[in-house]
Amino acid sequence: MNQYVLLTGGAGYIGSHTALCLVRAGYNVISFDNYSNSSPEALKRVEQLSGKKIITITGDIRDQAALTAVFSQYSISAVVHFAGLKAVGESTELPLHYYDNNVAGTVTLCRVMRHFNVKKLVFSSSATVYGDAKEVPIKETSARSATNPYGQSKLMIELILEDLVKAEPDWSIALLRYFNPVGADSSGQIGEDPNGIPNNLMPFISQVAVGKREQLSVFGNDYPTPDGTGVRDYIHVVDLALGHLKALEYLEQHKGIEAINLGTGVGYSVLDMVNAFSTTNQVAVPYKISARRPGDIASCYAEPSKAKTLLGWQTEKTLEDMVRDTWRWQSQNPNGYQS
Ligand code: NAD
Ligand code: WQD
Image 1 (cartoon, rainbow, N blue to C red):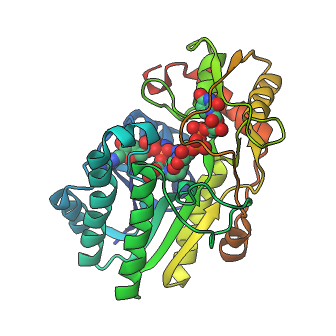
Image 2 (spheres, rainbow, N blue to C red):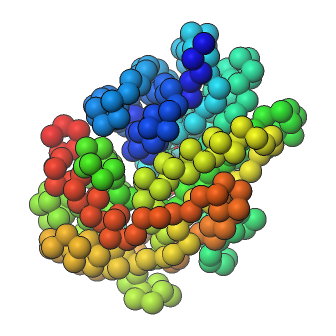
């Protein structure tokens, strides 16, 4: 019988790039997504790009019966769990919705996995679990904290999964702590397609460049950083996708739970990103300096050596790759998957 890897949230930004990476590596992939923040078109394009079939199931991870039906029908060897809500601002307005979707959804997923004795799980965690870290670069052993319900939900899930492994040591779990994913597949066919006004820097820059927004607001230029604007560890989504493939391979051989940073180890400022985008793509990105965004931190970048040691993974893409691939996707699909 064919073995499958189940991707919850497989139609999303990181899920669709990971689906492409996995099918190209020979995995059979099932996506389970409620499309609350994505389009079925993304995985159609992954099928076109790869020439491989992806089984797509519409469903919600909080729906135990729907998940049970999938595990009953297919032989699933591992789960990569992307499904979750991720807008920090919205999470402060709708905390119950975020805890229900992200935390309760994950508990339901794990319950069903356990029932079917599927105990390999890659979880989409986030550098947000480090809160306002005391030191950069940030190691996996750095203290965890959260400043908003979204971040709390990721931290709670990490704690729940740690307790699960303590109780049942035959699980194999990777907590992948992503830094700031950007970019798109080099085909320009799949990419990040946020609903409404983008919260994140890169989609905002690219929507300004394509003429959908007038100008970028740079949130603060008085941080203790080289140019005063916030510094982050931007990671190309194709490198990130490959990290999931490596994590699945690792879980084949290892039991227990590991938290692993997925970042480049290099920080770039907001103005670095604006300049790289306009220079590489020869397109104007008008901006103004505005007030700091509440809750933002000055500087956040990874100490990425654990991923190299454990998974044999490190990033390969450059800043130019990130901004060029973002622009190819945005300029070819000015209205995302509606284009
Ligand atoms: P995304 O919104 O593009 O993808 C998430 C997918 O999950 C979407 O397709 C959405 O429809 C689906 N989904 C949400 N709730 C669901 C539910 N209850 N049942 C089934 N499907 C559901 O986001 P992304 O950027 O691809 O992020 C993937 C994961 O990585 C998320 O868990 C996110 O929190 C985490 N993460 C993202 C970033 C980032 O900046 N993009 C950084 C760190 C961590
Ligand atoms: C990056 C930098 C902003 C928009 C968020 C989540 C985090 C993780 C990734 C999921 C900051 C500046 C931004 C704009 C700006 N997601 N900026 N103008 O805040 O590092 O992280 O996404 O886990 O949890 O908090 O990413 O892209 O929003 O901001 O000046 O219009 O760009 O101040 O310095 P952030 P971001």
